[in-house]
Image 1 (tube, rainbow, N blue to C red):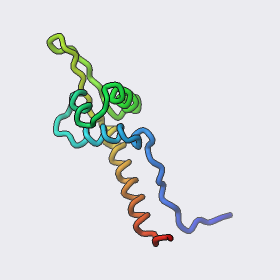
Image 2 (image 1 turned 180 degrees about the vertical axis):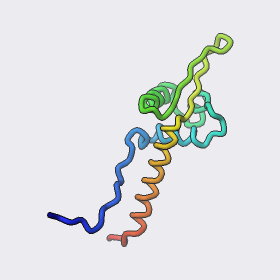
Image 3 (image 1 turned 30 degrees about the vertical axis):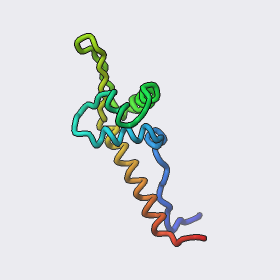
Length: 112
């Protein structure tokens, strides 16, 4: 029987969130004072194409991290995005893991 004296921290990251554009979307939504953010605002502020943003939002929606609301307002389509409670929790968990990785790296002696 093998005893483990110390365990290494779990540094696995959520692959859904770890992609740059999806991380940017979740971070933007989490930092917004508005409960729903227009698709056009996300596209412009994050400098993404409409197609790329749509693909990333679909992935986040399938994971349960965002909710997408599409409506017609005065004959014009309007799409807004909001962060779900599950998405907020997943982002907080992701950030905590990144902080743990940084702490671990800082605590190790530099190797040449």
